[in-house]
Length: 191
Image (cartoon, rainbow, N blue to C red):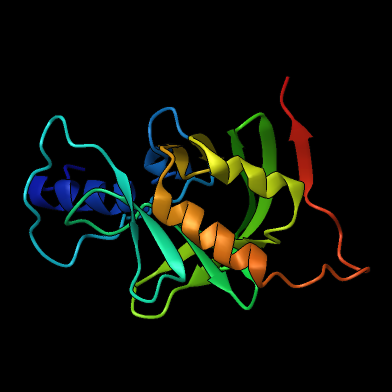
């Protein structure tokens, strides 16, 4: 019995659709349960950054926050004082419900700040945010240049700056006493 060619081609297509395995949809050299996420796009076109541009600290209106980043772009890192507590925000996309430790190293200190995926008013998506008592010895990491590492957020090299020092001074003057039930942050003195 001879099967007509159009019918043979149609049945081959149907069979291919039914036998497609999970392995054929897996990205090459990727894990089985890999999920591809698209990164948020900026709100509008931005001018290309000059090759020798340096990120720097700037003060937010009101002086209660210092923002680190490139001129004309959104901040990479924000340190704010809210009710006598330092709020550390790493402006790197985070998945809803995610938690991590933001490792900061500088000024002879290493501090690991617990951060959570947090919605920031006026911004789309979720970013990493945590808090630190300004009287904590680990807060000394902010007194000079430091590096910050965040899983999935990469490493950031941060220079020292007067706007950040001013936020630290103001916040330390209004610091709240740590509660006896709160766990201390993981701080280490670098040798």
